Length: 341
Image (cartoon, rainbow, N blue to C red):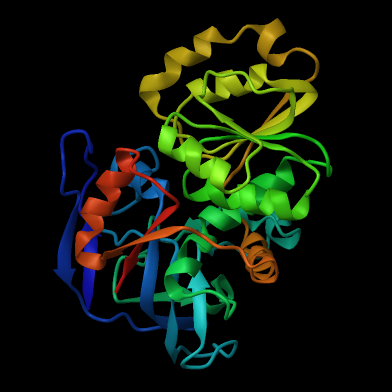
């Protein structure tokens, strides 16, 4: 099978070909696993974190990719949830122990044995992959393969972030950063909280214009001041500066939800700008989002199907994965980038 391999960590500021094409054997599903023929795989900022070492794979080489859509072609022993031909999706959640208190309460994203697709095991930048059947989810018929791909992470993690924001209908919400996840969260927020106004902060003029197209009440630069104080802000950026700026805009008791696996180390000086009375006083909260729970993926896919969510996608052939990653690194974004096989 064709695959794109990450052989080592590199800096994308200096290296333009982080992944190498390879021909590999088709994997064989084990007990409780299914073999999937991949049709599409989204390109996520987390891949940049893996490549540049902010969340490095434990072993090399590894096939990245955790927004995977495809069809089951073979079922391993004791795998009876799906049949060959069923269309399924796989997200960042690959497996957990299934026994600890976190797993038993639906928070398997916090399990000490959590394993991530495309980082701890081979992912979807390939023609085939294997996955535990409980970590594969049916894809609603309303979505094409490419449109469904970003739902598996950008959408699911956005759904978890929106739940953690604890917003009531009518309360104002801020979104800092407007890439693959942000543009889906905006659509979700307008569906779930139709009386809430959504304010978007983005460095790119193109991203701000896109946010207004999708119904944002206001869009400004990261350092701009919105028309009103915000009950919650969801940050989807890789930097610290937007976190510091967002804290200034929260209402008393407001909550900032940081939707990022890692922040870029070079931006840490921004944290020195935190002024307790301005940024943190009045019982403001900061809540991080850790991975994505398996239940988030299933619940979100059902919601996306009901609300007719429409991701904006840009397609690339598998062989051009490096170009897609570099465009993502350089903020050439309108929606989500997707590899098609």
